[in-house]
Length: 317
Image 1 (cartoon, rainbow, N blue to C red):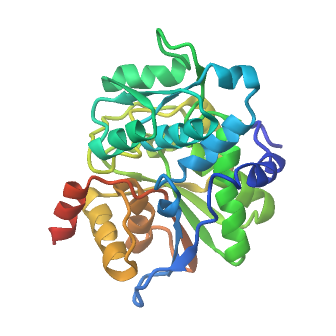
Image 2 (cartoon, one colour; image 1 turned 60 degrees about the horizontal axis):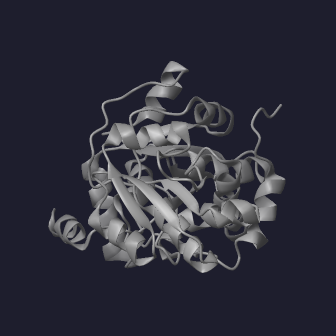
């Protein structure tokens, strides 16, 4: 029996609700003939803001009342959810305030500001506290949680609907885990339509709280190390998201920074796809063989990476 609040009906309703914001992204084969599996890339990096986050933000704001929207919106984000909220806020002519960790990359901060968002940078622990408080002192705005929000997860889940339309015989789906809103949203759609599919969250091994928490059976705190995989990774997992993960996922798999960098280079070389670090984790795991064989869909969650950082990674071997 389901114990979470999100339903496939919520995901289906989100699909037309976000149609004027998010594009239907392509699913393309990886151009690597000797790969350990038949690998496909779901290119969310092609969204108007370069990330899947536009889906959840659009659906959440679509479901807000006029009074809520009039106050403006507040998000805590390392960059991509902030861009999703700011993009939609600009379209609706309302203010958007972003609480960001002090390590947030310049590319993402500048993109938020170009969209009209106001960015407040804070230390990591204070940033993470905002997710728990669902507010920030001095900001009277409607808070949109980046992951622990059924409206956001329903919007994210539309990726699963598209995926099954394009690849109905998919065997496994690999989804980056930051807070869990992407993985749990997509998994809600997949489990309802194709229960047999294997669904794995993927993390960088420099910050893999879900992997540790699934092994322990309760939220664990890990030693998170910031890296170029800045779009995912944290010190712990919300208990509510862990409950969903235990219900919906087949497990969590990790990749090293070297494996992720290699996957990022491979996508650029073989498919001419530019991914950020978080967007390359699923492919890194697929190439490692940890997810097995068959038809594997990798969610390329975003492509917002600083150009100097990208150039450095592409130049390495």
